[in-house]
Amino acid sequence: MAINKESQSFTFIFSIIMVVVVATVLALAALGLKEPQQENQKQEKMQDILASIQVIVDRSEASAEFGNYIKQRITLNSQGEVVSTSEGPVQSLSADGKEAFESDAFNIDIKKQFRDQSLPPEDKKFPLFICEKEDGKTSYVVPMVGTGLWGPIWGYIALDEDMNTLVGATFDHKTETPGLGAEINQGWFQEPFVGDQIFDDKGNFVSIAVLKGGADPSDKHGVDAITGGTITSVGLSNMIANTLKIYVPYFKNNAEIASI
Image (cartoon, rainbow, N blue to C red; front, side, top):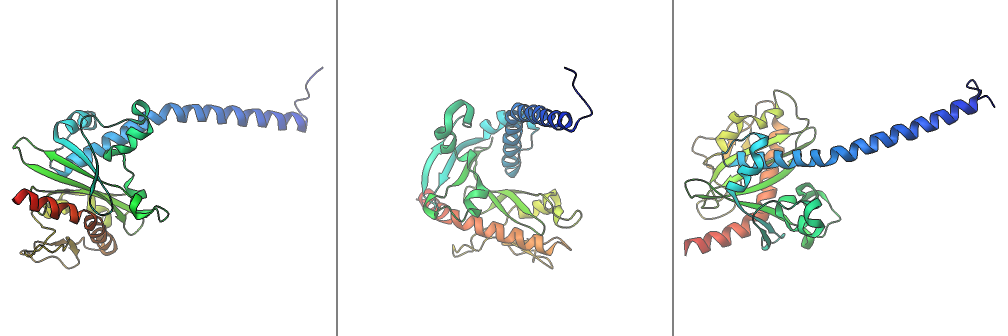
């Protein structure tokens, strides 16, 4: 029996077959690319964490160098208390299972912790990375997320052994305005954060503000905002303050212990 290729039924059946074939091919391609994509995201995250302590590496070097500098990965609860600590290689979901993966602070989804309103405060988890450089000095890296003018912004700041003074900061964005808010990922904007402090002389948490019109050179708690990027600058200030206040109890408790 000859097939009538001009009939509507043939066209309909052929379209369905093509849709199924194409969908199958795309699904298989997505599965095949998922693991490399996850590995790339992992390496980029390691790069950013290292950059916050002034260690600049290529993505291909990120995994090895991350292990050289990041000595502990700590998970804190919403009260700033330590709930778990990880050392050694970062846990992989495929290799170690869901429980081990989720217990590693590196794998915490920061966006979910801050933005998921259905997540009870007692169930939220916040990562902290303890680093050690060649000079033997320890630093503490805090990841953060926030909202700029057009979309999400994020970054990492690193505190010195005093858990107060910044030794580095890196920020990035998804859709901020080129030449304005998008400049938060430039070195000239990030470098002035180094040396600023999150506590005042009396030990009160004051964070670091990104100030429109510029910060006074003697101001240890402020940096210059980006000209024309007011909303992004405000979003960055809010991001820093809202994130760091979670870590304040940990910093204060451990700074007191270190001073004994």
